[in-house]
Amino acid sequence: MSKLSFRETHSVAVRMPCDEILKAVFPLLEGADLAKCMVVNKQWREIAQDDYFWKCLCAKRWPSICKRPQPPTVTYHKLFKTFYKRQHRRALLPPRLSLNDLEFYVDIWTEDRLIFSEVVPGPTLQNGIWIPPPGICDVLKYHLEGSGYKMILPVEPRFTIPLSHSVSVSVLVVRKDSNKVACIIDKSVFDYIDRTAYRALAFDYLDISPSNPFVSEIRAWISLLFLDNGNNEGIIDVFGIELDFCDAANSEEEVLWLLDILDWK
Image 1 (cartoon, rainbow, N blue to C red):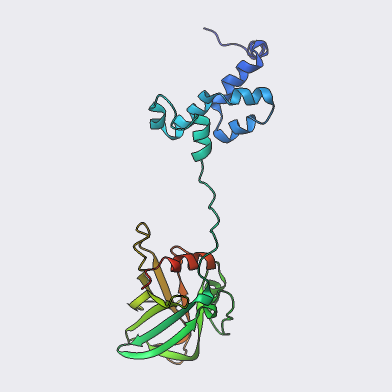
Image 2: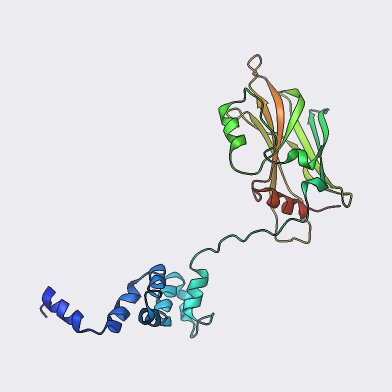
């Protein structure tokens, strides 16, 4: 069979009804393009709503679902429209806690000697109210000014720690409205020192309330922020303590929701 010339092909297309042309083209389109065709005019919308086209699109993404005699939803169009892309993250409801309701108890030991112990009101740790001291390195400054919710406690007076010593930390939090206590960090060791960012890091897994059985493996991170001690590289000069929950929470609202589901006792 000889191929049709361009003139002959054009002539055939001209003789084809518009509906037939659309029905030949629509199965070749991606979902977003087919959806745009539905708003061109009434004729295009009526043709593009044919569930056969949407079944073809669903078959490309979820072939097994199209083995059913009927779609699991009312139509394949609805199935594709609902699941073809991730839903936008829903806004959180206002948290039931506020930082004003909380007090944090921070204790740091080097070997068996207590070197820092302080009761910290929740508002003191509010993100953005603390100005870092001059002289910190650029990497640490970039980290502190970067995105993410950081709860930072200034250390005054500053204290020093020999790098050869083992340093551990515990953090408890108390709800002033109920006098209940939860553990955030339980005697974790600062076992990693980032000398480029001048941070010593420790973490612990949060104890989540049994009423939230599907929430687990969320870490609380705590960092000692220190300055370059040019006189003695074996000692770090701590000027701040940073607490964050970056595994799961990156705003004040998210942090408060996370704290609310701790195993309060």
